[in-house]
Length: 368
Ligand code: APR
Ligand code: ZN
Image (cartoon, rainbow, N blue to C red; front, top):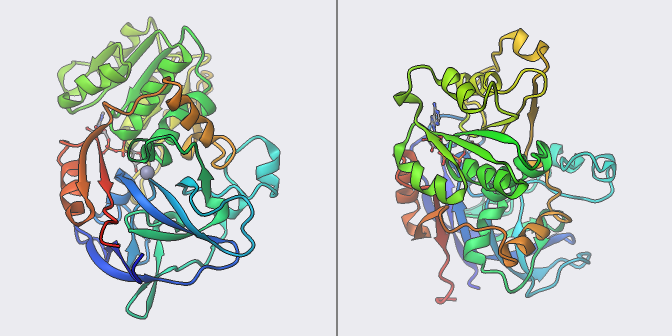
């Protein structure tokens, strides 16, 4: 690996990133150096350049989904070694904090602490990576507690999608909502994340899976992922009436995978009174608040949230890779485009105009 690596840097809400030459800081005792092989472009990355998310400090290396190979380990790293195939993850799993030992959540206490990590050097300015990762770079320095070792036989350019979209969507259905066989499910937003919520519902044995998306181009891939009905909300007179009719009075589960106040309210309202469960997955832009009709909740519906699908990143995520290798999961209909790092702004443009589902960046390390 050359001393300089390329990294996609956001300098502000300017609509694009710049691929810059950066250096990586030396490894701390608990850090690992990961050579990235593939990385997926997520809507959350885009929200740092398209005005949707405020409060970020720039410059910032984007990317929080990917897969790679460990090149080097700090002297106190005990669970990883050079050559290991890994998925770096946005949520750490330290294994010893009250959250990690509770068995109730994947939100390790370390996730809420500022790691202080600024491993990329642009000139003499030290930059953070988004989620303390920054996977849109040839190589990254990341804490051991944020790296999951996976089956070496798994294709990194496919299972990279598990790092965000796969874990978030599959986990929302399997770990957060715990959808059961025979259930009816509505998934709002059939992007990278929603498609995996569909896939998770299918794995759980849901019999009715209704996908709702304003983009009619999503229908084919959604059917491949498992939807039994596709609804374009702009084409029906009353969306809620239509969904209640399709689900005989209300869905057992719904998933908001758009990041929109009104859609979240619809997601709650379309579930069955008495037991309907809605999982909030999408991130509402800016300072938008949740707005719900109080009776929707009083009537016994529940609203839950989840980050990365409530999946413990180091101990549970590798099992999803195993399920992929066993043939239970597919990301074929999910990955719509493959590009090189220098074309990343093209990838963002395709995500913004709705022509891409997941675009996977491939890293060419041939030059050293
Ligand atoms: N109703 C239904 N679907 C909608 C609506 C709407 N009102 N508005 C947009 N959509 C659809 C888009 O057409 C698109 O297919 O939602 C989908 C969003 O997909 P992506 O842009 O690919 O986003 P994704 O990466 O899946 O992330 C979804 O989760 O992590 C968060 O920040 C992320 O809030 C975002 C959400
Ligand atoms: Zn993401």
